[in-house]
Structures are given as C-alpha cells and as structure tokens.
Length: 61
Image (cartoon, rainbow, N blue to C red; front, side, top):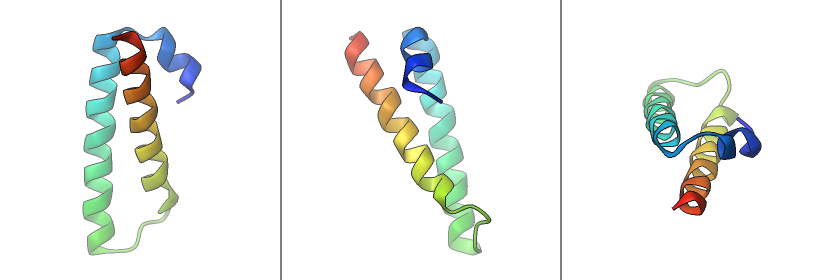
C-alpha cells in the first residue's frame, strides 16, 4: 500500500488496517518458525507497512 493511499483514509480505517496487517505479520512469523516461507521478504514489507500507517496516524492526530 502506498503512503498516498494511506493519507486519503480516515483514522478508523487506518486503525483497522493496522490491526489486519499485525495479524498477518503474527501468522507469518508463526509459520516462519515452523517451516520456511515462500517469500520471507513479506515479513519486512508488513513491518514497513505498519510503520507507514503509524506515521500517517501520528500526522492526523
């Protein structure tokens, strides 16, 4: 997701999106502990998306 798209979202949507991404990250970390992932770079992408969302939330507050 691009930062421009995030800035167009309202605060409630951003918070729900952050929650969804955190759940995905948790699931991927759990799978990564059990076996190899097809795309381990996805973990980094999700962490960066969370940071971007938190930045936009801080800007809006």
